[in-house]
Image 1 (cartoon, rainbow, N blue to C red):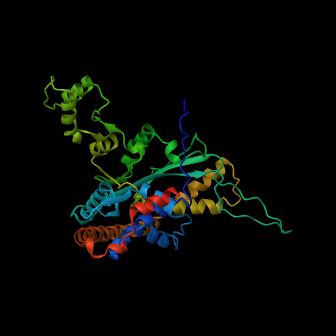
Image 2 (cartoon, one colour):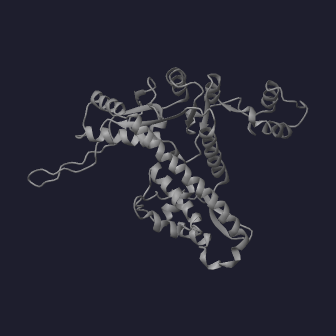
Length: 381
């Protein structure tokens, strides 16, 4: 009897990047279409190895990163495969940009509120290795160790929302990121008790699709649901159906009424006269509060110079850094985000135009396109 084959774990991604650098890679890839060029892994690698990204990985790692960002090879009419974004990501980005543009162009625009969470480690500091007078090197502190504070806040053109700051110590220490320490109930309490009472009437609240932002009410049954559950869901939503129909038929009816499925946070916002707008997947660079968090963390690192502060002191430094963020800082970050929005609009137009022409004229230049099978075979070596 043969033993089962060993499960081979994929090698780690070399040169793994944070969300900002991933956003830069996305924009760099889409820029190929603006230049009238076909994006390939080899050409993209040359671009991202340059400043400001300075990617240190190889083609294998880059291929895995862009696949995580929602890019994949798509077959066109000629049978050729080209590197493109998933349609759902493109559609979500276009819808988000359209909604933001329509709000700004409205005669009565809604005040926009951007919210997000971040974290600060107790031992966070500027990473460096000091040297003793005798020339011997001192220890380099591991800044990821120690307790962790989770910070939840929101802001807009006028600065941070007064009274909306929530900071608490994570029970998970420094394991994982802040998503492990947050949950829907904690976020919902903050949203109802600290955010909504303090923002302007009829605000547009921008947030991402983190799991604790996205609890669904009236969830549509799935194939794993029992027939009785399907019948109960249809009846509770007053949807006409035949109780004697098969489970497959009932599932089809349920799928046609997915609009009944809503996010709980969105419903809470609407009940208070506000509206929620969700960021496209993998597009944190469209949220200016991400730039604000970068400024906060930079100040904390500088003040926490020895990287060995007590919890109370680290918390105090974090509060000071947040209080030092002004409305001018916010306006600068929002202006920067507006430029990125305009950049994405131009890239989407260029991508649509180029892909359409590529489908029509693909036979005109066969040699300029890398073979995707070659790219994928390289991933295995």
